[in-house]
Every structure is written in C-alpha cells, then in structure tokens.
Image (cartoon, rainbow, N blue to C red; front, side):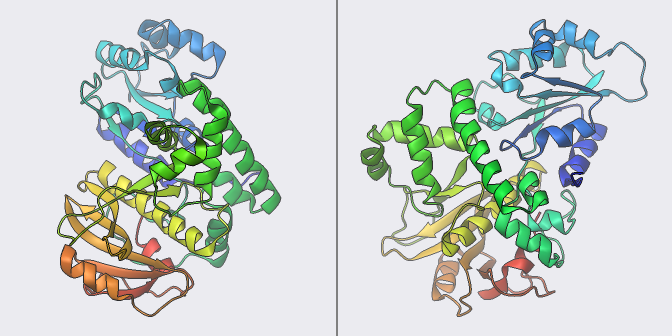
Length: 400
C-alpha cells in the first residue's frame, strides 16, 4: 500500500477558495502531485486527457455547469478542478466565459504541467480573475511541516535522517521519494523524461526536430549548475543560437529545468548576459558539487516563487559574477533589492572571502556559506548579518 503524503499545498488551496473568488492556477512539473492534491479538495474533476471529460469541456460553459450540477443549492460554492486544460487551444476563452457567466457558484482550480504563468503577459484576458500558486517538489521545509502561508522565514527544525537521505538520493518528486528504491527511481525518471520529450513537447509545441531537442536535454542534464553559452550549444546541436534559446525556454516552460540570471546592479564589472541552468530534479546528478548546488537551487526557487505567490513581496533568484570570474552561487532579490547571498559548498567550512566582497557591493542583509555535509544546528541562520558558515539542514528547514 502506497504511503499517503500530505502536501502543504492542500492547505493553501483550501484557504484560498474559502476566502477569494479568483481562480487558482497551479503550474508545476509533471508528476509533482498537482492532480492528487487538487482532487482531494475537488467536488467536480474534469481532465482534458480524459475523452469523456474533453467532450463536456468542448461543449462550453453551459455543459460544464450542468455536469457539475451547479444549479443545486449548497452551503459553499463547489470546487471545480480542470486538469491539463492548457492543452485546449481556447482554454482561456472557456475559463473567462465560465467565470463571468456563472460567478460565485463554483471555485475553480486549473492545473497544468506547462507553465500557466507564461500567459500573464500583456493582453491577458484573464487578468484579475486568477492567482498563481507554483507547485514544487518536496523540500526540507515541507518535510518538517513548515506552514506555507504564515512567515517568510521559520524557526529551524531538524528533519529525520531517513527523510534527508531520501530527499538527497531520490529527489523531491513524491513517488520516488516515498518508494525509496533505486531501481524504481531510475525507471520512474526515465519514463518521466520520455513523456516530457515525446509527449509534452509534441502536444504543446510546434517543434519538429524532437531528436535534436532530446539531445539538447541530455547535454543540459549533464550541466546542471553551469553557465549557458548559447553559441557553444548551437554548434553542438547544429541549430541556430535563436533556436537553442527558444528550445531552452520551452524546456523551462515544461519544468525540465530553470534559468538563474546574473544580478549586475552595484556590482563592479559584473557579468550581465550568461544565465546558469539547473535541472528540476537533482536525483540523477552524479557530480557531488553540481548535485549540491542544484539541490539548494531548487529549494531556493521554491521559496522565492512561494513567497511571491503568497503576497509577501516580489522575489527573484539570481547569482553574481564579475569579469574576473569571481562568483557567488545565488542572490535572493526582495522587492528589487539584494537580500541574501548564498554560496554552496559540499564540505568546505573555511569562509569564502567572496561573500564579504560581494555583500559590501550589494549591501544585502545576509551572506551565507551553506555546507551540505554539516550537521543540523538549532539556531536561526538570520540572526547575524555578516558572512557566516551554516548547515544546509538548518537553512533549508527555515524555508518553505
């Protein structure tokens, strides 16, 4: 029997629909738990990939209203979940029509393995009608039961050794994490990769050169934590630089990986253009340094997107590097101002002088050297403002 894993997002979504009429959009990677989590609070569930459900959706708002029996008197609006609806070319028009025609009779949740947030750009016909909640894999903060919607930074809590080891070895996607089995994990990851490159790309893009795109995916899979040099990738894959840029953007939109861009304001001779690439799943990375940096990057991305989604401010994940190749791995930006510098080390506890060097330039509040192998310490990483060495287990427990 599969162990049930309670996700913090269940509480967040339930709280939202109890307070707000805006739709909930839930983008996130394939197999991250969106469907399971949303179905737990759904009264009515419609999946675009289900042929019977698709027929109802294509008939329009009236058919959905009747199928969901929304004319029946109820104490609270019913919760209606649309899964993978973005695969329908007219999904925004459908939602706008339903939302405007039948206000207050239902609360709507829309999930998708493609980035629903790309449609926030100018001319968005749904503007003001939805809030985004990015769903991420499991993290240390979630495993120690930090609430998602109370504080930015929590008191440190120690996670048990099995959870820490399982998260590091098998990644944060629920199924391999729960199964705790190397053979299962390898098969699951390979299937997920094939589904992404052969099904999601086919269904959601117009890319024809699937073999070359898959080759790019394998190359990027071996370079997590490295800088992207588009010209080099262009020569390797034998497509134009613009094509490489577009394909990497596609892989980001499908949550295969993400880019962290350099921060250059107030940095002397700063690098401005070259982003760093990170996989969404660190479990298959063999190099310890690359794996550790990706592990921390995924935790930080979950934090900054979660804080932004919940209205604590506008947060970004960046890094700093100058033309002399001096670099600090990450910089968290809060409301357009540097806030926390983070350098990742596997075991090195000698404080990097670059933390103090860039902290003076950025004028950020905190500068942390995060060490993967250090044991947990029950003391906040944020009581001191100067550069300090902290255990990864402590820092990550304070995040979401």
